Amino acid sequence: MKRQLKTMQALPPLALATRIQRLKALARAIRHHQQQVAEAINRDFSHRSTEESLLAEIMVCLEEIKHTQRHLKQWVRSRRWHADWKFFPSKCAITPQPKGVVGIMAPWNYPFNLVMEPLVAAIAAGNRVMVKPSEITGHTAALIKTMLAEVFADDEVHVVLGDATVANAFSALPLDHILFTGSTQVGKIIMRNASDNLTPVTLELGGKSPVLIDHKYPIKRAAKAIAQGKWFNAGQTCLAPDYVLIDAARMEALVEAISQVTTASYPNPADNRDYSCVVNPHHHQRLQQLLDGIPNEQIHHLGTVTEGQKMAPTLVLNPPLDHPIMRQEIFGPILPIITCEGLAEQLAFINQRDRPLTLYLFSNRQAVIKQVRDQTHSGSLTVNETLVQFAQQGLPFGGIGASGMGSYHGYQGFLAMSHMKSTYYQSRLNLNGLVRAPYTRLKQSFIQLLNR
Ligand code: NAD
Image (cartoon, rainbow, N blue to C red; front, side):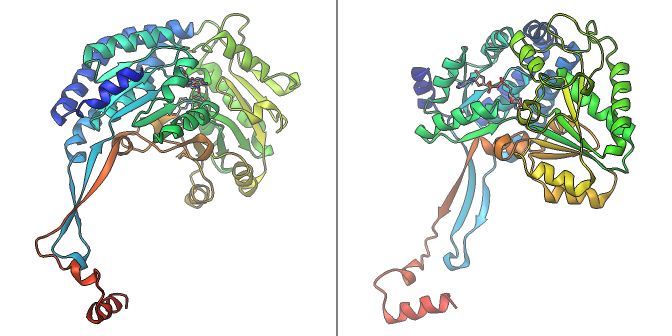
């Protein structure tokens, strides 16, 4: 890996024409391989809904490439910056410059998308890239390696396969930037490793994304959006609603409404081709253990699954707040619903915990929306829907605090992967001597004049 990085760092950045050509070729390859991608993910997960893969792994990436192609010529332009009047007639400029070699580290839950979207940003900005896909989704990782070799020369994009030990060594390389997507726990290791080389990092992490429902909002509409966002990919989405806060008086109605939508969308989850599996037995067991110690009457399974790697959509009513289910990111098809009275108490509940990747609010009242937006910290705020914020072209995506650092997508991704180099051009007429030593009486008076 080290030798590969040295070779790549010695080469010039990608010219604009090369970037545009490679992005076009990447889009063609993604279109060409889309069924294979869905099939590889399906094998990795034991079962992953094909439509979920086509939407979340393929469509979103193709849209990101289109958006980037549309705007890239404008993004790469050098911008004039006016020099301060005291330096007239000098000029300044800000020029985006590729950082060099970017390392992309991806998780398993959207194993294709979370390699491709950062890759698009890195290539658009002119970088060479080393990619480390997740070892948990091995079929997809192997396909990514083959596919990227069809589009890029090995010294433009190089894919490294391997387990956590390889990933650890990867993050300790003297890369020029790392974009890591994964858990908060591993994100800390990545940042520690990167700090030895002073490698800048973008950390796209996870956490517990809460849902708030205004007491005036129609409960069925909220339930539909929550259920469909939560059970997509069987809850294995960084942005999935993690838990819901609701007034006690509306708890029963919410449970009833979520149950109805769920059984209509995913009847018989055990055999339902639209309902995805939990990625592997380890995570299946982890999720089962998250229910340990919670009395049966507080657990509502919305369907029956008796074997294999699927887990039925499950509601958990009012679990103890110190139980692991309320301390860890769930990352699976379990949704705690917690009674919490009134907006002030709900905001306090959220503000006492780690800053989430996203906050979902169901409300039609502008004053409530403004209050929640201004009085909470989260990577993003999504009003009256779930998950779709990820698919908005050019809308920065990223967390804050425990849910991440920095953001990408669209221009924000281009900026994250570029160094904004400032340049100062001194004019021939140079009056700077007026403020340089030796400080004669005249110069002293001039400096005093400037500071008035
Ligand atoms: P993970 O942190 O276990 O793994 C992510 C990457 O880190 C993998 O490539 C893996 O090889 C590597 N890795 C694992 N252990 C390592 C170690 N000790 N040292 C160095 N590298 C190591 O995450 P995961 O289980 O693959 O993914 C789930 C997590 O990712 C969830 O927390 C989820 O919320 C988060 N996530 C965040 C986003 C986002 O955009 N913010 C998107 C998807 C997933």
